[in-house]
Length: 218
Image (tube, rainbow, N blue to C red; front, top):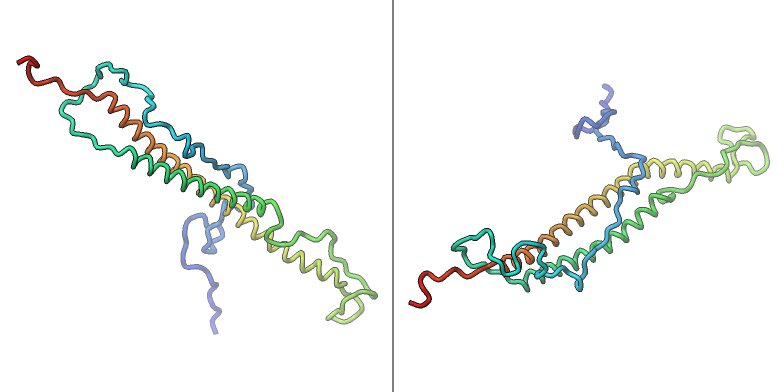
């Protein structure tokens, strides 16, 4: 009977599979990425949104504009709708950031504790004879105490937990980093909505009625 081929994945995702086992090796395994996981806060709230009427420069004092666009079409702008959309997104962002911070706290607690398994036992395993020893399957009077057996089992579970933690901990932290980046993009979008209101207000202040086509006295 032929020897079966090794059970290897037929999918090779990238050249990062150094040991050719079909699994991409994680370059961040075993790393603590705490310093790269940002604290996310919302700087605006419903009561301190930048006003659309705040002018940050340009012609707004009544002087004639230097650049004139003749014959422009009417500009329709619903300031109330724009402000409502801005407040709605800001509220959603605040709720999301609150949940993110709760999750970040839980992840950091798991990363810096024995969350995935028991701690390593303090004492090494010792074999001894006679009193308090567990039965020796091989015969004779030498065996391990129940306490030593428990420590051996604990060591196995601790090794498994530590191995798993080397991969899951940086993965969770990188997931938080991606969420923080998404919040940053959302914040930029909210700022763009606010800027559109300010842009309209600036345009409105700089707008002028065209000169009459003929003499006003004729």
